[in-house]
Length: 79
Image 1 (cartoon, rainbow, N blue to C red):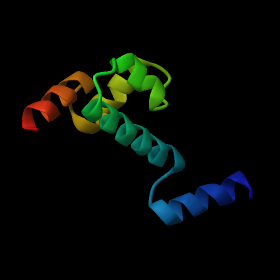
Image 2 (image 1 turned 90 degrees about the horizontal axis):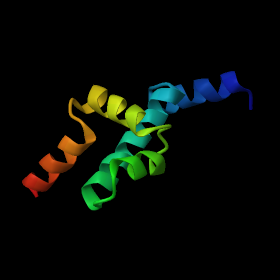
Image 3 (image 1 turned 180 degrees about the vertical axis):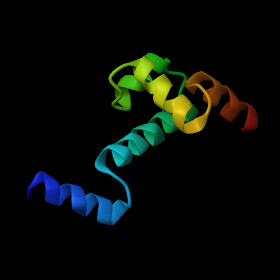
């Protein structure tokens, strides 16, 4: 399958680009890890597929409006 065909297929199936879909999956995985563990942000960033903790923090803040650490604290306070 060509790259262009794959890209069109992903867009048709998900309604988004490959990169946006991948970022969403990474953020979802990072959120689950933040909710379920006390592992450091650096380890979670690596496990979720981000290139660095800084990259995860930037994407997290852009998508959710809070830092990963703040998200973890808010999730635990609500639970």
